[in-house]
Image (tube, rainbow over all chains, first blue to last red; front, side, top):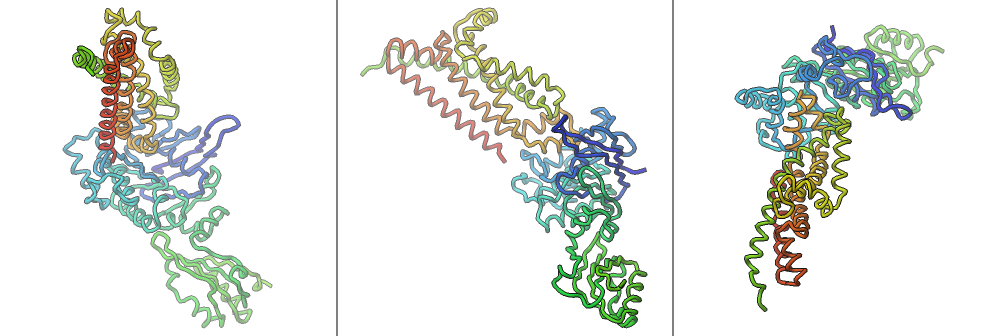
Amino acid sequence: MALIEARQLVKTFGDGQRSVEALRGVDLAVEEGEIFGVIGLSGAGKSTLIRCLNRLERPTSGQVMIEGRDLTAMSESELRQSRRRMGMIFQHFDLLSSRTAAGNVSFPLETAGQPQKLIKPRVDELLELVGLTDKAGAYPSQLSGGQKQRVGIARALAVRPRILLCDEATSALDPRTTKSILALIEDVKNRLGLTVVLITHQMAVIAQICDRVAVMDNGRIVESGPVIEVFTRPGHPTSQSFVDEVINQTDSAAGLGCQPKGDLVRLLYTGRLAREPLLSTLGQRFQVEAAILQGRVDQIKGAPFGTLLLDLAGPEEGRRQALAYLKSLELTVKVLNHDADA
Amino acid sequence: MTLTPNFWPMLQTASLETLYMVSVSAALTTLLGLPLGVALVVTRPGHIVGRLWRVNSSLGAAINALRSVPFIIFMVAILDWVRLLVGTGIGPTAVIIPLTLAATAFMARVAESALLEVPHGVIEAAQSAGATTWQIIWHVLLPEARPGLIQAVTITVINLIGCSAMAGAIGGGGLGDLGIRYGYQRHLLDVLWATVLILMVWVQVIQSLGDRVADHFRS
């Protein structure tokens, strides 16, 4: 059974002519222990979706099941109990400006009614977990964006939730800080055995830490699957454009400003193959010259993910065999011009 | 130039009367106005108890009604009830009732606008942490809006000083009474200007005190 499940979730804002359908029937299942990413452009409905998961937004119809219990049918007090099983962090951190870092972290412990003498050591432990021990007495206005989000994470984890919801948690941060916050999220997830749902509009965020991803467009999930699969075989134009954002590929020779001598071939490969001497194999076995027009290796969840644009030149038979050989490997091959088939 | 006979004792008595009227009604106003301000905010549609929006609209209408009557007319209008309640319609104690009522309506609105400054995200963060409505009011709304609320109390008190002077005109006693009866009607300019000066100094002192306390809580 999935830890978090959304069934046919619909959310309509307003009514009559001016109503907006933010969610148009979303199904989602997040398994225990994974980092699940939801990506979409602004207005796609991803923020509404994550806010439905702890009922900050009440769905118009459909169900949200958390640990097998229907959140939409809960009373206020049951809901509060369930919310304590789910920490949440926010794009704008949303810390209490009247409290210090330590005061913010102790807030959920106080409202959960924990005795004062247990709160202090727990707050120290949490601040240490997020690396902010020396900022315990600082007010949010004295902290940088990254430090504020660390406080946000410590606060979210204070009452030992099983789930961490991240609502655009890195969108207000610079790229370097984004990386360190994501690394922290992954670290606490592993250490505490959390399940993480994060939403973002940045594919780089998905690539860095997510196990699976759902792509949202116009209130619907248009594609979902393991991150590596969505990267290598995006099945929807929206997914494709998000993937392009990270690997920045050009699918035409004209886009590169040159005339290919032979077959223009794009290779997408992962894992072990990224370390294979592919090009020399092509030359030695098939007498095919492979010129690299474009290429890069990215990291997806710590594993190498390479993209290469090759110009294969040589005798026709050799080229055919070379393509057949490439296609037999664990990689995605796309022939962009069709000389080979002619 | 010589001062009006009894100049100093008159000023002293009047000052103490005003001080009494203003401080008692300020205390009562804060006690009543602050909770009303909180109620006006949290019952707004979309706020933490937005389902009580009917309370919000009735409360808002009542406050608007109260605030739309000029204070001096309001005072006269409720005179009979005041007599019933405290046994007399004149003097500082009688004036405290209309002063408190009018200032409470004012306070509720300025407290409301201070409380609305608390970002919605901060409230949602508390909600998502499983906080109850009371916990959000007590641990989030009030402390987060503290500087604004202190400013709200400050301008309410200043407003009360002004109203208490007006109350003096119809027998409420205090500096306003002194200023009108001696300063204006008997044309004793030293008394008139002395009351003006005292009121000015008080307002200055209260405003800068309020600013300083509010700044202290801005972090």
